[in-house]
Image (cartoon, rainbow, N blue to C red; front, side, top):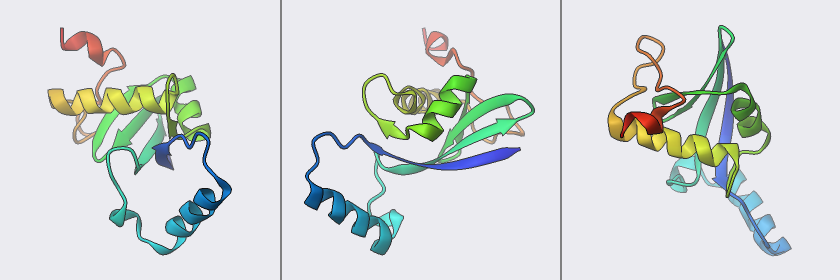
Length: 117
């Protein structure tokens, strides 16, 4: 099992240099727990037995290989990003009560949005 920890955040469009420096200082001196919210958190990208998974706060969903790679390479939430797609997939799995206690139980499937219909 290979786990990559990914810090997820919103895309910083049009940020000033001063704001970027302040964010850098915030990341260094303030614990993550003080500014963790729905759009800023740690996720886990997991490769296990040739399959790919994505986990947030104990909820695990299955991911395609390209989603796994893209979430690691670009961990920002914005339109059409893999991180955003996985973010919503995890939220839906949590609402349906799926993907908890992986690997002892199954992860939520890739086609989770079809299950709620």
